[in-house]
Length: 116
Image 1 (cartoon, rainbow, N blue to C red):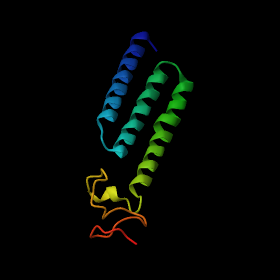
Image 2: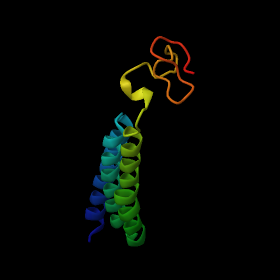
Image 3: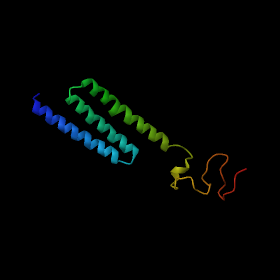
Image 4: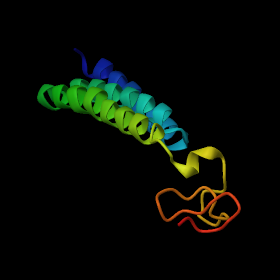
């Protein structure tokens, strides 16, 4: 490849990396973040390939584009499916409730009295 074409490809890959990284930071949903993180890994793979670092590109392809987003998605899925989680009910989530949603044997009844 010519030097000018290589420079253009590197500049395009850098723009893709910058755009994907910005999108990952600005996204609030962890599931969407992991998807954008996968695109970021692909963009970094292209960048490393254009910079003639194929070993780093293959590692980035495996880890950054596949394994890490998959682990994030599995973790988010596990956390969201937690049974009896009082924070998923739409409350304030700061633990300053009346005790009606407290779990376990030490929680309170609906009228606020402690269980026996």
